[in-house]
Image (cartoon, rainbow, N blue to C red):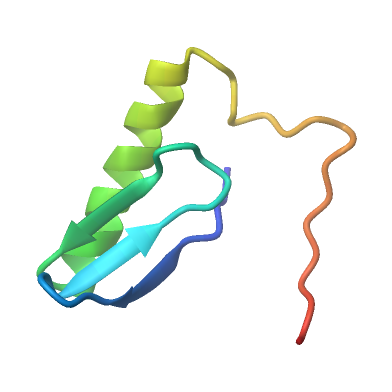
Length: 68
């Protein structure tokens, strides 16, 4: 499954990552590569901890991009 992840420069750490689709889906890292690895681990851990099958979107789910 592919999730949208927002990564930005942090104040106290090099990078901060957030995955809006996953409750608790936050992480950080010293480099972009480390941050991506860490958020992948965080997403896996959240899915496991929630005990839900978040890997399978419902048939009512849509992915769209909007410009503001």
